[in-house]
Structures are given as C-alpha cells and as structure tokens.
Length: 86
Image 1 (cartoon, rainbow, N blue to C red):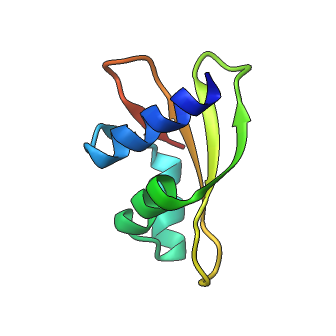
Image 2: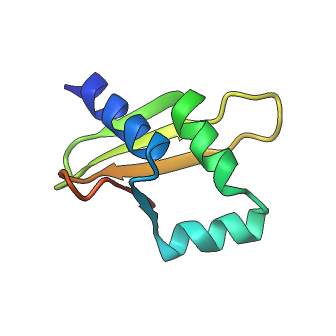
C-alpha cells in the first residue's frame, strides 16, 4: 500500500498533476527553491516518512544531492485530484 502511494505521488509530479499550497510557495520563495528542485526531490529523492492517519496520506521526501537538504511534504489526494505539496 505505502509503495503504491509513493509511486502515485511520483507519477502525479511527472505529469504535473499537483498543486502547491500557499505555505509551500512562501517557503520556496524564502529559501529560493525552484519548482524543478521540488519535483526532483519527489521523483528521485528518498522517502523519509509516511503518515497514513490523515484523510489523505502524507509523505515526506528528502532530496538526493550533496547540496543543502530539501524536504518536501506531499498529501496524496484521491484521484482525480492528484497531489498537494504542503
């Protein structure tokens, strides 16, 4: 189940089927993080934690690079809503 959720989130980001919350956009601006870095973190990064006690499953991803670490929290919403980057 958890592996399917991760795969679903990664596919949503590959197909641009996601939204960014106001909080995520604000943090990206403050930290000068690009959308491509966010997508790369989710598609190629490591899964750190899965929280499945919410209505939507939340997954924490960590970027896989030698630069300063980027963490991204994503809520896997029921289809066809895609995902929401929190």
